[in-house]
Amino acid sequence: VSDIPFYLDYAQKAGSPILDLAAGTGRVTFELAHKGFEVVALEQSTSMMAEARKKLEISPKDVSRRITLVEGSMKEFSLDQKFPLIIVPNSFVHLLTTEDQLSTIQCVKDHLTDDGLFILDLYPGELQYEHATFEDIPAKLPDGGTVTRSGVIQSDLPNHLMRIELRYTVRDVDGQVINEIDVVSGAALLFQQEVDLLIQMSSMIIENEFGDFEKNPYTPDSGRRIFVLKMKE
Image (tube, rainbow, N blue to C red):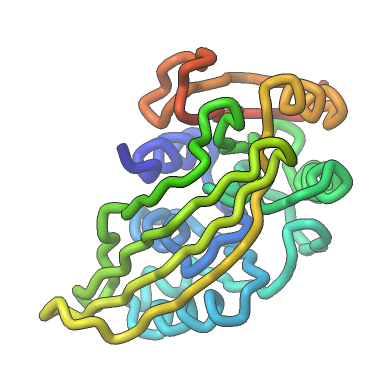
């Protein structure tokens, strides 16, 4: 199930502007902007940001004017505005140390409005295979083409780490491949007790916790662990 309807639902509840951390090529950012939301997309990778800029250039003016692209790390950023909604789709796991994870959460807290929400999307470490491959459903681009994300995941279970090899394949309207971006990264396998401790250390409050993007409750068998967090009053 796509995560887009989930993020759109929370965007409708929270309103603009929205901060999309580790936004990649803008997969979620552009979907939100198409629906009328103002989005700031933060991304550290130069190649990903270049692809996002290409998409921005060919987007309709009423969409592109709602998007602000910012090159930077989610571990340490300072923007001159606050947001009622901050999201980090698929990417928090790329923070490999507790220090980096807490640094990111602190930056989030610094940029949330008083009643703002932070959506934290995690993969439960207990359910990861030692080796797995995947391919997402192609996402539509403004010019009628598509971008598809596929990858290989290799888990090092004893050390709570994963190696992730991602490929973003961009196709034109005729289905011909016009660009491929390869990204290799590490990811933390976050087990239940580690996540519980991280949330506790963050000093944020859990408003909701889901096991998938259809908002089913989290159980130990859930494929995702999705938190909707807010500031302590």
